[in-house]
Image 1 (cartoon, rainbow, N blue to C red):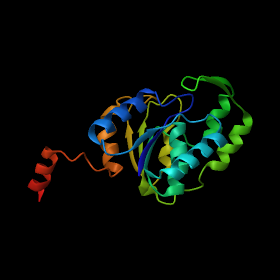
Image 2: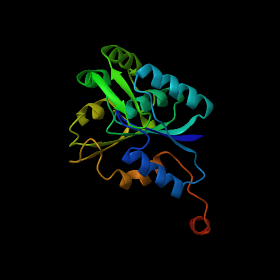
Image 3: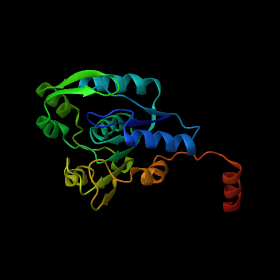
Amino acid sequence: MTLYYLHGFASSSQSVKAVQARQYFSQHYPQQPFVALDLAYTPAQAMAQLTEVMGKAPPQAIIGSSLGGFLATVMAERYQCRACLINPAVAPHQVLAEYLGEYYHPVLQQKFRVQSSHMAELEQLMPARLRQPANYLVLLQSGDEVLDYRNAVSYYQGARQQVICGGDHSFINFAGYLPVIAEFCQLTPHDTPRSREQNLTRQ
């Protein structure tokens, strides 16, 4: 079972949060498969990519930031797995309608164009409701200058939510929340002599 990280709009697997997550899980959970994808920038292609990859390696849990949080929700509903969302986009077809135009993928090194037809694709993907809100950990910063955090508070009712006063869309101090994310994802810590000693002490 694989732990996935899904980046946000116009980002990549080399984003600050993706790198921090990769380093953290590599150090503390080296036995846990971790994949940070470079997602295609059209909804249909991104969903085809996720369907193929997760079909071969089902998710233990999914971490998603911004638009990646929306896609993480779509896939978590499909697999009924846990998902940790960082300033997730709610109804992204409404948000991205203001960002139509041409962009450049920094890792794939190719141009892409956001079109109005993509908004319809996003709208069709959005789950009308969450089947198991308890599967979600939603981390929000009220100072998000791109997304209104209150939309996520409303949409993810029943989920475990933490609203941090201030911050911004990048989610300041993301690295400090990785232990909380790991716990929510129900990951097994690396089995070291020290951890075995602590387990015996608890028994």
